[in-house]
Amino acid sequence: MNSSESLDSADPLARYSGLFLRDAGVVSYLDGNSLGRPLTASIERVQQFMTEQWGSRLIRGWGEGWLELPARIGDDLGRVALGAAPGQVVIGDSTTVLLYKLIRAAVDARPDRTEIIIDRENFPTDRYVVEGIAAERGLTITWIGGETEPESDAGVTAKRLSKKLSDTTAVVVLSHVAYRSGYLAEVPALTELIHAAGALVVWDLSHSVGVVPTQLDAWGVDLATGCSYKYLNGGPGAPAFAYVRADLQGELRQPIQGWIGSRTPFEMGQGYTPADGIRGFTSGTPPIIGMLAMQDMIALIEEVGIEAIRTKSVALTRYAVQLAAELLPDARLASPKDPARRGSHITLDQDGFDQVVPKLWAQGVIPDYREPNGIRIGLSPLSTSFAEVELGIWAIRHPGA
Image (cartoon, rainbow, N blue to C red; front, side):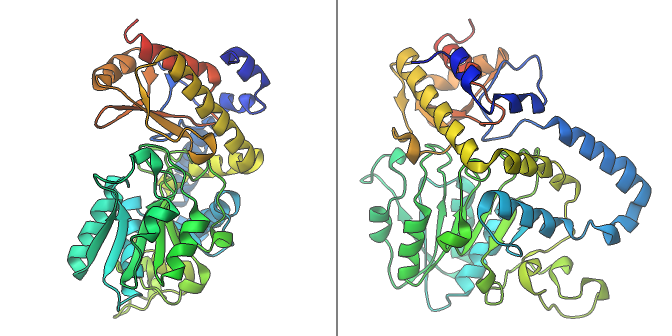
């Protein structure tokens, strides 16, 4: 196994790590899939916005470009990281709210069907939103996973999904990358299966956007959403994005009717008529400050190229797995062994890890913990070095040393 020093020396993306703000108290940051480091360029962007736009233009700013920002950034994100043509991606709301909007819209578009399919290994929010909509609309939930199903590192495969699909399926909700195991789903194959059953699919891209090459248009995806504070480095609570395929925009109607999503928002008239196109899936006033920082990361992804980012991601997770096998022989890899079948994080399971993580945080080594006994190691290719990975895995072996 090559040393971290040699890997960093040979890394063509190593020079980009200096673009991110760093704190001397953090020696190994391994949680970029929960919250990405800020780019130093974003500090200047936010300060400039507050002084030169918010501070000087005040309310006039809404008519000078702020209202167009959600769709403009959405188009940039679609082009750079999602494989989406213009007019299909918009920024705004949280992932939770957008999941609700998209799933409800999809359910209502299949009124003769009574079932939502989702996997038990999906992120809690996705499951909770589905449970709420099912109760609200009188639908049943069909779960993928259970005591007799494979371990979570197996993920949702075509075989597992095909056993659940039926002519009662309205919507399937899946994650591109599983939040715990890092399993990378085969979006084109699963989407094709779902369409063959006459259902719609909502993909959660929270753990893949910006780090896994994605082609939503080419893959025929119906609907997708994801957060922007992980690999898009938008900052804590930065707004999420929604993708609605162009040919569905006139068919689907989202359920949260707000003034910005109306056809003529400034007329303030009686009765709601949705705007044409992707704006019809918006609701309230856009969170302008919250969407500023992600612009710098989108521009950086475009400069570097998503394929190059994916190449380093694979190298980082491979190195982490190799180190764990050497230094943590009692830990179980709860992620796919094949690097091509996982996103940009891995999870290591071992009893007692819940006691280890607070010690690591105290010494500036920051991984994440996921119940019941997993340390999750999230690797952001543009800001994480191989040396950080080595230091982090070593610290897990010697917590508090």
